[in-house]
Length: 95
Image 1 (cartoon, rainbow, N blue to C red):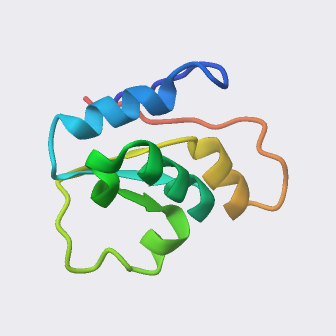
Image 2: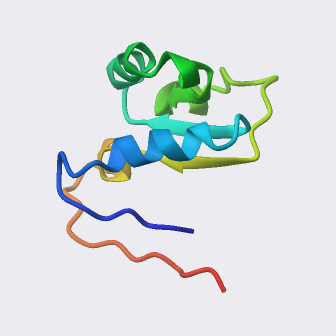
């Protein structure tokens, strides 16, 4: 797993889009339907590879096959799932 840690407006989404373009079997999960729609307009060549978190969880991507995914702004997705402010996380490094 690669972690792209940089400040807001640091190019993370742009790098995620470039990653998508390298393989049509990749998926980008985003935090909201509005963000999904914004990115689909901005990057029409990969629009079928961009899905918002809620739609993904409702299995609206059923029938589509993706080999791997990237999650853009996972901090916003995690905060939607947890009521309290998240101040610390840990991630297990793959060996």
